Each structure stands twice: as C-alpha cells, then as structure tokens.
Image (cartoon, rainbow, N blue to C red; front, side, top):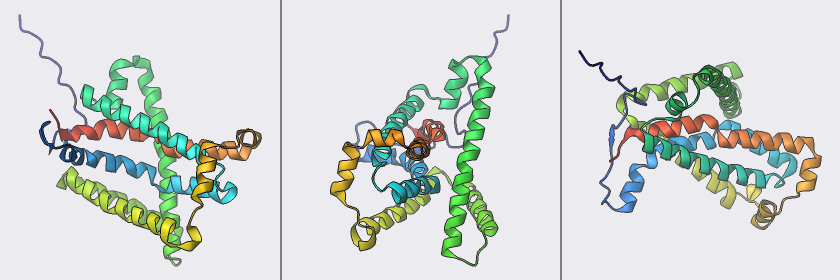
Length: 249
C-alpha cells in the first residue's frame, strides 16, 4: 500500500525565510548581536510612528508628566511581549499566526483573523493621517488628500524594495531611525525650548498621582490610547515572523 505523503508545512515569509546568514555560535557576541539587530530595527518602527507621537504629544501638552508612568509601564510590557514573540519564532520555526492556527480551537480562526484585520486597519488609519498631517505642516500648499496619496505611495515604494532582499529594507529603516534619533537628541539636549526637567520626569515616573488619575476620565482615556499605541499587537506577529529570515542553527 502506498504511503501517504507528509503534508508540506508552510513557512513564514517564504521569499526571505533563512535568507540572511548569521555567524556561528562561537563568534564574538557583538557579531551575533548585529546579525539579529535587523529584525529589532523593523519592529522598533512600530514604537516611533505618528500614532504614538500624536497620543503622547496630547498627553504631554494637557497633563505634562502625569502620564509618564503609563508610557514606562506600557514600554516594559511591550519589551516583555516582544522577547516572547521572538523566542516563539526561533523555538518553533513558526510565526504567531501559525501557532494560533495549530494550537487554538479551529472555531477561533475566523474571529482572530477578522479582529486582527480591524485592529490593523484602525492602526494604519492613524499612521496614514499622521504622516499626511506632517507633510501638510512641512509643505502648507500641499492638501491633506495629496499628502495621503503620497504617504500611500511611500508604502508601495518600500514594499517594492523586497525584491532586493531583507538587508536593504533593514538599511533603509536604519537610516530613518537614525534620523529620528538625531532629532530627538537635538530636541532634548540642544534646543532650549524643549529641554525637559529630568528630576521632575523621574518623580512622575516612579511616584504617580494614582488617586487623581482614576478620578479623571480624560486621563484614563489617554492612558488607554498610550497602551494601545505602545504595545502594538500586530508587531508581535511581525517579530515572530521576521526573526526567521535569519539562517540560524
């Protein structure tokens, strides 16, 4: 009797799976770190997007440092989840979506898919509008509609770079992140108008006024927005997938 062929398991990011060679486990730690820094760069973009800026700017403009502790806690939460997500991809050889398919009841697949699509659409709406507003501020003669079209075109251009390999995409993202980092440095340490009070920041970070926080609905709503913009659930699916672009042992 002929034996039934084993089903072929779908791999995550088929065109890029195992496409980036990494140093041997005996290599120096800094070389191993750099080999896996690319996925971290791509994931970090989700924490420096217009949605985060808009939410945090609103919180800072209205309540100064009162919600800084929420930013700190949600950042720790995001780091914890991202580490688990990366380990999931490396240990199982599957991304988070594939693990949900294989280990959760079958009836949960469509609800999970639809809820994720709605969440991604809602998140991307804030990113597109934020980028469009930024372009409009830089170029006042540019209408918001034209800015939205340009932003959408930018996404297509970045996606078209996939044909040149994962390393090029990571290099482009590195340039963008370095630009943001330089701007942050100038704002915090050079420009006198935006230099923060680090002593006051530390005070609000470790000793928030929790009774006043729970008495104000506006503070709670902003805190929920900060948590949602910082944790970025779709980044967990991305991280568990892109770590598999490395040809690890």
